[in-house]
Structures are given as structure tokens and as C-alpha cells.
Length: 495
Image 1 (cartoon, rainbow, N blue to C red):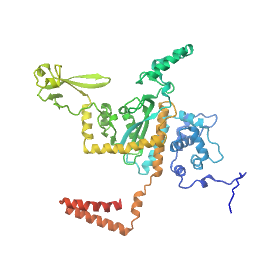
Image 2 (image 1 turned 90 degrees about the horizontal axis):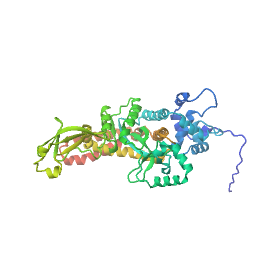
Image 3 (image 1 turned 60 degrees about the vertical axis):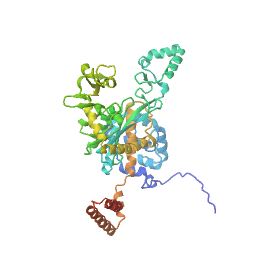
Image 4 (image 1 turned 180 degrees about the horizontal axis):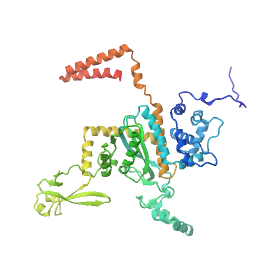
């Protein structure tokens, strides 16, 4: 017989939220694992003694985490989703009949709290990852990604107009034709640069582009990732018109401080060519941090036809003529050492036409930081350096893709560099939370537990017999080829 369900709301209901949320639910597990009660103590200074009560700081951060975990880009959407999900209500500590905070309260609270509080929450989650044994921390891969600013390219104006906005507004109101003319001139301008153009809606956003794409208003997210576990150990936002090399010291300092609080020393940094600069390499050596950063294009490890002699600081050409160091020149804060030969020595040189052309002498220039570039070039071109390049790509690129596509970091919906930094920190925190709840430190134990004691003993004995055979017959190439696969087979059964 066909059933029929008639729904009638009950006036009284015996209901307990904790009974309805499954034990293995994501937010239930997160509630049991993550204690954010410390933020209440750290936010006391933001409030007075009288007036209406604010949103609970712990509830605020939990709602923020829900937004990034669920890839929600709107405070209104966060509140709507949380109000309809029993597991989210249980996570933030609200019952089904309680009204959640108004979405504008989240926006105001985000602006109220300082960046240091968001960093403290990030470090709290990172410490949980460390406690679980997920983080080695000693080798970090660093890279960046553009985060789209909450500003339109149509809004940018010239800086001189920005500097005298009052007169500009008067002109717009007095003569409508001026507005039309300025608008056309603005849009017809190609190759806009930050020194000439600014967005009045978000002055901290910077014009930038990737490859052949069109320029956009962006921020830059700098991320440092542990190469062993892909856990994010450092995250921050910076201005998009800065070179990555200019941001390296900031992200490394933040990462090093976060790890040192748990007794983990940062020993190696892997990065791409954009992080190569004299200042960056000098900073890393000063911190005793080993690095693998390929040198940028203009750097030349050797000069064809010329040999450099550090003792005496001079170059010698293939014809035995000396090019001594003469002076240091400056080009936009880029200091270079200049070497040149004498006209008398080059006058009758057989290589004159191909070496110096119509000039009377040969000139060579090197950066004053050449010694740092040379040492880095030696490391990156070694066998280990090539391995580190592959490791860097395999580590950082999937993490950035996840942050941009699945944790809501692609665009910041607030204004200003401070709020952009909070945005990047919370996205990185949500990413680490997902990894933390997926991590099972019993995986290796479970892999061994499937064997009985007798099976483990047999595997142990057989593997060591093969090792003895391998050592005995190591001189034979044929033996190495035949025995190694067998040994690896036994090894794989254990690990």
C-alpha cells in the first residue's frame, strides 16, 4: 500500500542538536579539535565596558572559517548557509532556534580586529598540524599568486587628478564635457603604470598582469609551504607592483617565527627566478638559510672570452689584456661594478672588430652582488639543485591552485592591504584545517597491521637474505639488475 506523509509542525519538540550531528562530521570533528577561546582574551582591548554586547570573537572566527572552507565569498551567504546547517550551528555553538549575527556585524568585526589576531589564529591551526606530526618545516617552498582586488579597471584615474580631487570634482560638475573627454583619454591610454594611475575606490590595489593577459587591479599572496606535507607555514598579502624578491624577507621572517615558536629551525628555501635579487640572496645568507633560487635573466655566470680573477678583482681577455675594476655605477638603486681596458692595449688587438667594434676599449659590468649570484648559480645547477626545482613545482603549485579555486582566495571582497592580508591568512588557515582533518597519523601503522606477526618475520628474514646476496655479488652488474627489483618488492610490502 502506498504511503503518504503529511507534515504538521509541532508546537513542542524534544530536540538536541548534538544528537543529530554524526560523529564523523567535518564540523563536529573540527569543534572537538580546534579551541579558539584564546581570541576572547586577545580582543578585550577592542571593546569598552558598557553598551550592547558584540558578537563572540570565537563565533566570528568560526563563521569566517566556514566561509573559506565552503568557498563562500559573501558574509550574507555565510550566515545563510550556517543558519540552515545543523553541523555548522553545532560548530559555532548556536541552537536551531537562535538567531545568528547579522552579516554586517561580520564585516565590521573583520575591520575592527588587527592583523596580528588573524595571524594568531593561523598559527594556532599550524601548531595543531605540528602536534600531529604533519610538519617537518625545515625546507619551505615559496611562491606567489595574484589576488584580484575589489576594484574595477574602469574606476582608475590619473594620479594628478587624485592629488587634487576637489578641483577635479568641481570641473566635473561645472562642465560635463570634461568628464567625457577625461574618460575617453583614460580608456584610450595603453600600458598604464602604477606611478601614473590609481584606483580611488581602493588605492592599495596595484595594476599588474601575468604573461600576455590584460592588466588588472590585484594584490599578491605570498605563501610558504612545507615540502614534506604541503602544509602552509606562512602566508601574507603584499602590493602587486612589487617584485617577489622584495617580499621574500617578509614571508621568510613570518614563517621562521611561526616555526621557531615550536622549536623547528628553517634551513632551506626553494623559490623561482622572480625571487632572485642581490638583496634577497644577501638576506638569506645573513640568516644562514640555504636556498635554491635560479638566477634571473641578466645574470651571466661567465663571460665568453674573458676570465675573472677574484684576487685583484679584474678580468683577463683571451689575448692576455687586463680589464681592471674602475668604478661603481648606479642605475635605479642597482649598483654595478664597471671594468674596462685601456685604449692603448686594444688598439692593435686582432679581435678588435668583433670585441669592441668602433669603441676604443672594452667595457664589462657586473652587479656588486655577483659573489652571491655565483654561489647560488653553483647550487641551482648541481644535481640537488635540479631536484629542488622539481620539488618546488610539485609542492607549491598544487597548493596555490587549491587556494585560488577551492578556498576562496581568488578575489578579495574588501578594500585595502590590511584586509587583503587577513583574507590570505584565513584562506591559508582553512586550507590547513582541511589537511589536518584528512590526516591520519595511523596510516603507516595500519599498513603494517594488516600483516600477522609470522608474515612480518618472514618478510624481514627474506629481505635481509636478499641484502646479503646483494652485498656478496655487488661487483656483478647482472646481479645488481636481477636482485634489486626483488628487494624493492619486499620493501614495498612493509612501507
